[in-house]
Length: 168
Image: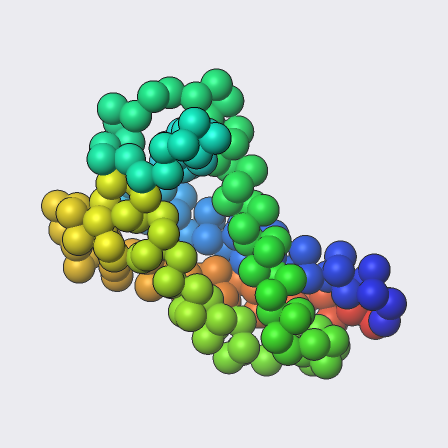
């Protein structure tokens, strides 16, 4: 497999994990009335960074940013793709030829540091959601979401390997 093919497969695996997470969030919103992450607010947070505002006290009162929904959704998928590349960097081409469950799952759990210690505090929710109305539920939703993302990366890897695409 060439480097370009690996790069594409890693990107597809990241997108696959992100799509799985989005489908899970949609299912939870419809079946359990649990609101999904508002990606426009993530875009607002990111969009205010060039203004030197890295930490917001309350995203609803933060200065709106033009195109914040597009910024948030783009960041969401770019991060997913980046995680696919990280999986490639850590596991190498052999995982892509014969995917196994635990590497993407463990990676997705390790990456909980990002929402707990960067995103949530930066968006005014405190470390690991400590300032939310239900911190333990917020943390549990993150663990479940990251688990679904890891399972989605694994499933996408299986599809790519089974299709022969991972062979180059």
